[in-house]
Length: 590
Image 1 (cartoon, rainbow, N blue to C red):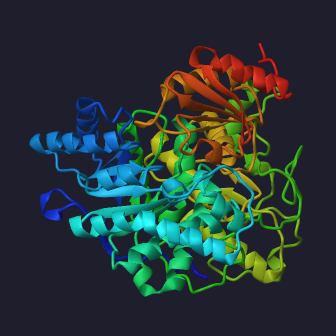
Image 2 (image 1 turned 45 degrees about the vertical axis):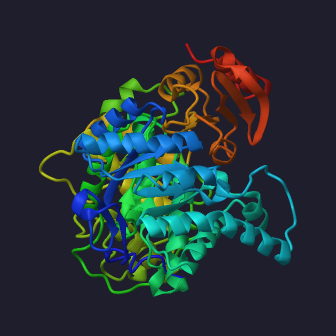
Image 3 (image 1 turned 60 degrees about the vertical axis):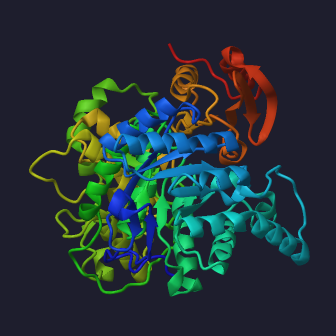
């Protein structure tokens, strides 16, 4: 199966156009030859009309092209009429999307008032109780019939009213039916979405897009690749646009890195027609990151140099680290089963070394100039005599006229063709521009370039150079490895962005939890505003803090809720107690 026209030469995946609203009156067209559309979501209560209107205007002012509002109940969905009316009265024509999860009746109300409705197949008509059940083919067919009965009325209304739909599957909310047949897997996410798409197509309704979101960038990348490949298998008229996003990415640098890895790598392969960067921050900040990320893609994707077709040497649909031999970096080793290491230049080492304690988790593990790295030009076929042995550390030569993603992918293929297993040192850039990059752009470029390759399983050590600050470049390298799931040197947080369903102040609570727990190396904590994605999306977290009711918090260990309705003012202390009781707590260093 192929998921994109070429992993070597940039070509945007061809899609049909999906119309959201009236393009002559502020509507948006997704897909086709149109630019990638930027989206975001409101964080306020949907029943607060004035706040919804103001937040929408604030988003539009910074370039948001589609605004999503949650509609958890029929009452909330009905108030979308008032929100849209006020926006139009104030001259704001931005398309509005209703976000629907558990209540089909809320979708039926919302479709009357908004230009687009997002439904989640995992909980629109299904249930999720983590129940283990064996489905016969007949029982499975009966379940599909029940789903069709619940979903068809929305499809018919959307077609009649000229609305758009998003079939948005989330890794955290696959139904028990899908989980029991396909597992908690990218395949399950894709098949869940296709079931709903087939219902749309039965009624000759094609004005919809897909999304495949996960808080894990590697899982998210695999899902979108598999979806694109499956759509191509289904036929040329299954060319529906794709909405990209890493859900629950978190805040600050970590949230931006995760989003850049997931969204940026797919955009560089020509996949993606609309994006949302999900941050636990004020929504307008998401649009700034969207703008910066989209501006980098023409530079990071290979559209200037034509590379003859070469078969890739990795499986794009199942992550597996490239097999390599071990090599010495001095005091540590890389390659084989070793951790992906962090290398710095001599200049960076000289600046950071005096400030780093011997016990620090973030410290250089190799100095580039001391490593005797073999630099190769992957644009030329490699000869056996160029490489003495498999333990020789190799990298792409400076000045090679290819973007890093393409260059290192090609290097991996060249080595595979020779039967070599040399460990590869990845670089975030292959040359420097005359003007230093801003820290925001340097972070995004490094995250896309290195993250895309790490998600392919390529890379045994990394070198970040485009970030001009020595300490910042070292920290960025470690943060990229953590976001890509290659290392764990600090506490890992899964934190959803705020929305109208959120039952507590996510930004405040996230900061409070981080202040108490950010020294817990290797512990993963999920902070979820409500139960929509809570138990599922945080299933691989060690501990979960989830809004259960107004002022009440449910605490989880893995998938299991162990404390219900804890008063919010006591919940962080209870969370710390849980971590202690499970042997994961350590006192912070002085």
